[in-house]
Length: 274
Image (cartoon, rainbow, N blue to C red; front, side, top):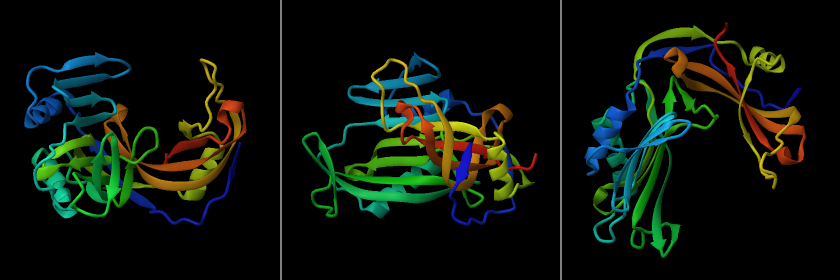
């Protein structure tokens, strides 16, 4: 069962819905690996999904087939001039544009930036450029004025570390499929979406537990949820080659097992009127 404690919200009554083309993460990965100086064929790590991994000394680059994304980790040189935050942001945007990592329908909105200083194994934030040895910047993806969410309910985007000389030393990016066409879709109201959630038309996509059981298999059961927030955004649906509007409800599990006490839960409700 659900209870609701939501602030009044106004959302669009219609939004674009997008049809997409398929992505080839291996081709994308090989191109970007070469850009960063990695060569040869990747090591393929088989799990629930495939990860393609390149290594060169302590440096690594990987591309993952689901959720589609890339990740780079390179040693940061100790010498050279560190760029300003503005120059670091420009370097990331130039990299994204050069490799066509983001479809033109997606807007990159800055979500954070900071100067970082390394001391031993510790990396601390600093306000001065002098002791800093890297710059951290991050962006989220926005479509039609609304954020894009991962399958687990988090916002997707790009985060990077820029080292001396203005070179990217670390980057983690979600790779969304390129858009082929878009149509205008009529959305259900937030009241209708709330009723749909109450009628079990929502999908539980994430449960974040603050407590852990010592047992090998945790009991994460609960029988009620107190919903405290709702957002409208987009979700990538690979099964239908589309990007669709979705309501994202978040709340706290109630009437829980020990392992679920205080758990934060996230539900998706499709926003397009069926």
